[in-house]
Image (cartoon, rainbow, N blue to C red; front, side, top):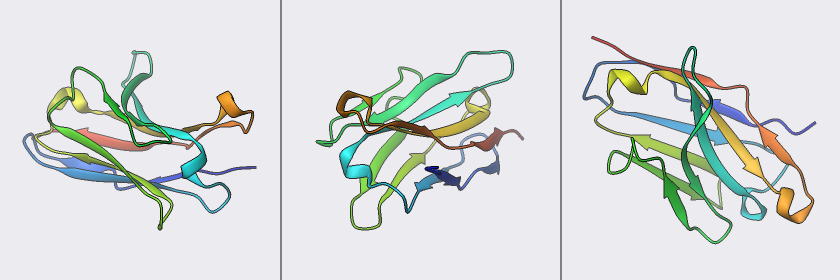
Length: 118
């Protein structure tokens, strides 16, 4: 069973910053399209940011210019730097590693809570 482990969530004031990290010892992210998704109460899970195997990045419209996704091949981690956080960013954030295009599985973490509130 592949486990993706997210860390770095917490409570932050509006305008603040947080960095989320996703790690695993069971697969190597270089072989997967990886991304961060979030789900707020009563809403559908949505894409926040993704980074492909060849380092092409994509962002949800609501986070463009504020969030940055990065993959560290040596450490085998995927990070999400979140700046200028807003209350509407409050959600559970999930890490995803999608290798379905290559038949190597699609894996999710259990999520980490991010709360933006004064």
